[in-house]
Length: 393
Image (cartoon, rainbow, N blue to C red; front, side, top):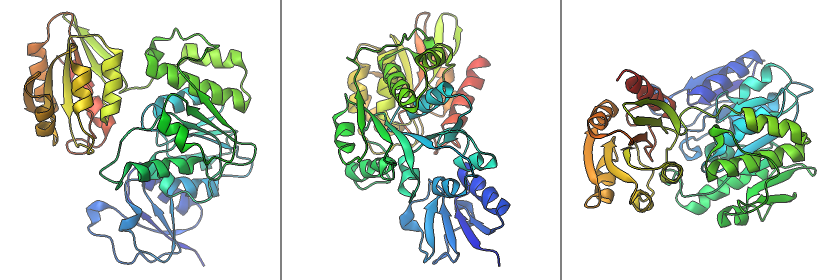
């Protein structure tokens, strides 16, 4: 008799989990937001929850797991260990960079390919980006080597407190095998505190440390990328990758789209897509990495964090702010009186306005400091829309 599974949330990971379960002979029912309210209770032998659905919304007597746990349980015989990357910012770049350092690695999770796709064949190692939402629903998934990049206020629209957000992140090393390790950002006191309960060796890195590799790759410029490189290199070394291979990967890493991505230079104006900046801290990194004058396009679905740090960082560097999306009034209020504010509502209007305002030597920066779900499917959709419109100017 076939087992019954219910998959809640039909985004990328939900669809991948459904395909995996069906391939393994399960009877699968699915439910998505657009299908209406969830039944109470959900009846199945196993319930697989997509990251975007809080556990508190699902009532069931069945075992409740996430797509990461499902994939781990169904990895084929001979599949290698997991190297996991979490943190508020920098985790996608660090994941991709670490994967670039290890030949034959599966690279995915919260970045790119859902982890369920690793079940198609045995990979020697799995480099997996793990969000707090994904970590909430792991049970037995063992992460051999963990990286925690940093910890800033984020997802306060989902978590009652910063402590609960941090607790979700700490789950990354809870099942670490005895030969495992944790690499942490030693410059971040919150991360240092977070790693204290780890039962495996903890390896901190700091910007002030001597780094035995050269960083000349433009895709890795800025202190934030130096931290990403230090984290990935340390983890790769602990996994057993030779220094020469690590250096080659640092030299050839192409970077990721939507992260301080230069779209074009037009009439002396640089247009930069930083759509991945879905929170205030990520936009702070963008402002620190660029020279002014900057015309900042910001706004979207806010996450509850204050914008004052962004206002402070913008002084002397930002020429004006073009606001879009749901949180536009809040951003206007935070920046108001100190900067020229241009309410634009939508991204196309902001781009048209920025083209009128920007002069040669200026930079137009899409770094929203907000999630994208008010007007776009995801940050990639927002960034791709920006690139398409800018390239059409």
